[in-house]
Length: 352
Image 1 (cartoon, rainbow, N blue to C red):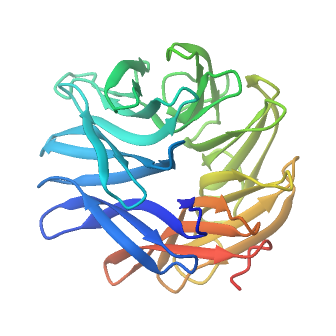
Image 2: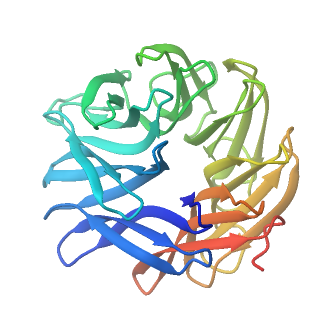
């Protein structure tokens, strides 16, 4: 989700058709009313996962496309401000790749991350993190694989102040002392995609990473979901690292209640605090609701808000808007159907 220069919004998702799905991009006005909607894809299933604004005023989109019923490729798409295609490329191999997050680099190229399935017919088949560098035309320059003997997945990527890349996801292969099952996984690579530092955060149960930001001092805050710590079920996990060192943790905290609470995306705010969007089953009005939590630089909660109806609602992505309020992208479900929804709040997280 991006706020556009006219104070509207643009976001990417997936649209159900009769026998398939397409990547869908919607541009709205400042009140969330659709201005235009465009779909992209072929006759099989296409899934939209990530959209970022580019330096030339266009948008870069990453998703996943089914080549056949059993194989997928990363789907990289650049569009102009009206939704017209500038380029569209599929990036993959003989096995399956999924595209989860894309950024434009400081050189005007693109780095994509997702997941690669190793030989599905092999007895020890597993998933690895797949990282792809593409040029300004969307053509692949190189591919790097990060993985071990079990499953690794990537959900997000940023470029840090040094020009290196920091990936967040989950790992079953690189456990630290006292960890088991799946752990929140953070990887720093150099500009050529070669890993420099790996670190896992978690405990004895399943923990998954979803989003990471770098702060002005060079440290990082990461967010995910933990079953190892917290109040019960799944809880939102937040940790801050030391300056320039993803392996050293300064503090960690959790947010949640007795049921499941999931951390989706973190946003650095103009007042030097932070906000997270996600999904809660512990609080709110329905089976699942979106939540918005704001916290300070040492993890203390400033406010907590929920949004939703009697059905299920999920928070997916968060931005701070030009008026210092919040723009929230999510899903709302009812009667076996789900719809993309956007919420706009004031600076206190209130729908006014």
